[in-house]
Length: 218
Image (cartoon, rainbow, N blue to C red; front, side):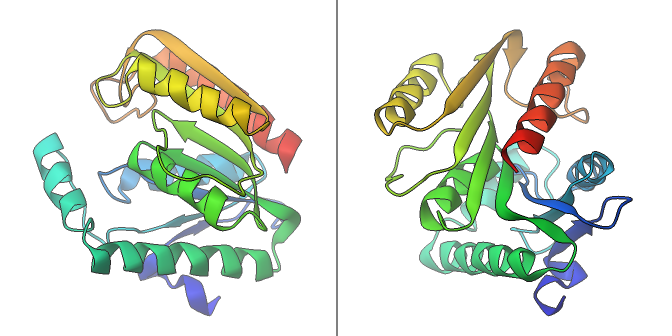
């Protein structure tokens, strides 16, 4: 599809060639090999998965590099470019012949979770399910209707417990379906197998809960 050329992201199709659609939003490392592999893994579960490249091909491997790279997109121009890319992703997936679901799902990691929650608020017409890994949202979520599933680390300075609890309260006050999982003994990035913080058993559980949730809601 013209809106999804390879340089703009990665499209993974299930073996059946049709299925419910999931937007995969990478963490601040960029669209690296791990997130491409994750898109393929989700496709193996029957989903049509598109992972937009929010950093236009740039990838970071260290925290310092990721902070610098993320900072490059925090100005008005960078934010506008990401917004346009996310809108184009939604529109293209809704029109894609392989997509069998009316609603789209979103799976986002840290920075990608923040953008995913923004998208659920920005495009409530399209987003019916939202999965966040160690990411919350402190802005306006008015209009969001997506069912929510969140996966959080016990020890996480980027998403501290009080922030997660406040976010849980926000979604409850909005009368949204929301389930939160907190994994003991874990830190930020515990799901990502290419990071030293990876925690295999927690990642296994999170994967099972996420896949079941997406199948149920889409």
